Image (tube, rainbow, N blue to C red; front, side, top):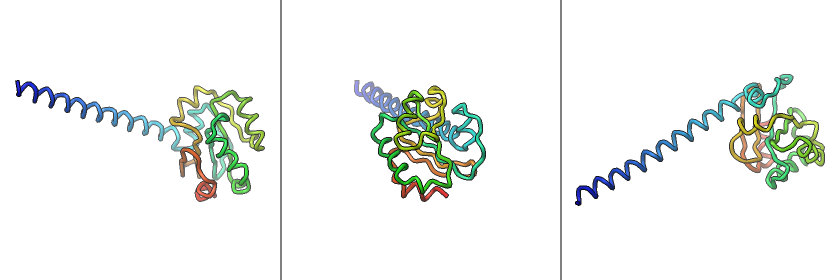
Length: 159
């Protein structure tokens, strides 16, 4: 009876460790796929279904939602410090209806930087919550921020 109990406990422990290892492996694969989708500006455009835009030295892509309080803070932070971003192309993407996103950005005079794309492309490209900021320099991802980020920190990566 004791041997059966020991074998049963050992089997359960091995099963749990195996399950956690498998889950960790799946998360790593998902993270690698996500990094591949956002590694370069060209691949990001491709996954979002956008045509490549004119090449510029630096681009900042902001993934947001107008109903998100953290996004409100982030957009206001960017809008209030717009002069810091005069030498960078800013693009704003959202999974919500275009009119809703543009109306929100218009309150901050950022509507001209909105990029319309299919919400399915957004869900297939981005993982995690909003806001997210991607800084690209010479087509390569330089920095990825998740959540509220002070403009002073962003400006360190914007040239």
